[in-house]
Length: 285
Ligand code: COA
Ligand code: MG
Image 1 (cartoon, rainbow, N blue to C red):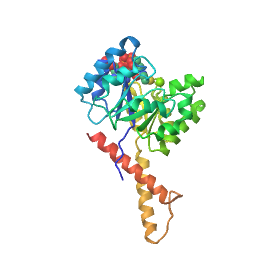
Image 2: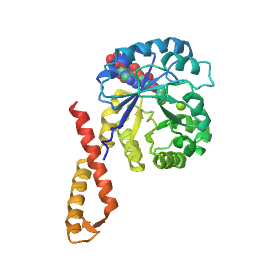
Image 3: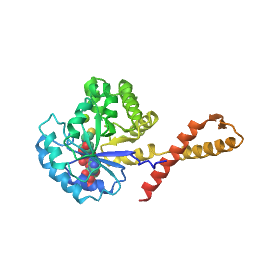
Image 4: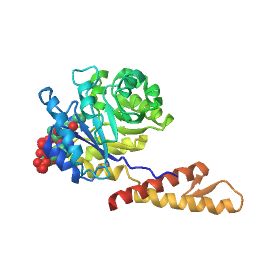
């Protein structure tokens, strides 16, 4: 089994802010989105390219996945962002407001061969075309853009996110159908730790691999919620052991804590242990 790369915490950093770019080097996040889009004002956008380029050349981000969010190609900055940063030391380019696979094609032809593309899933058209976007050979990650989505849907923010459940699930379905990493949207009240925890739990329940963050104070809770818990690890170990035991006598079903364990549950259990192992390695670095 391939060791998974944890993507629990994915922090947005304004690409224009030297101090935040520097601070992020020491934060225990799994991934960084270096933002040139909404976190940067129009006046600062051109200069931000050079600031970000210098930060990436200086590196120091260690194992963190480095993702650059450019401006849309239909804006006055998008093409310039790509030209300035196409060869930058990063793992993927994140395209905002993707409406369909054609938007990915337009970026792909401007990037070096093999450069990964992530898609912001945040427009009604993008959600309706989620599968063709996930199926695009260059796309390896989805980020739910829940603020834009709420704006476009004209829905209200609710703690249970009921008005955007279907959109979130379409993101998940498309991502899983095509082996794409799926990261949940941001939690805007960055001082509210309990609210953040509840939303992380909901995202994890749905299957998301991690959550996008706007502030360093959100990292610890998110890392915890998207890593397997001690109880999950313990259960996974007991399920594997019980299943291996019944297999010896030629049976295909074990019972653990009053619940059946079949081959498919063992596969899930092994995935949990592999992720726990990857998280432990990450923490040790
Ligand atoms: N990444 C890295 N460092 C960050 C950060 C981030 N996203 N947000 C804040 N910090 C740093 C600050 O630079 C500050 O560092 P310092 O103590 O060394 O000076 C420290 O964390 C504390 O910041 P704080 O004063 O609590 O926050 P703030 O009031 O300066 O900023 C926000 C609050 C929300 C404006 C800011 O966190 C931010 O811009 N977040 C990103 C927003 C974004 O990317 N939006 C687009 C995607 S939705
Ligand atoms: Mg957006």
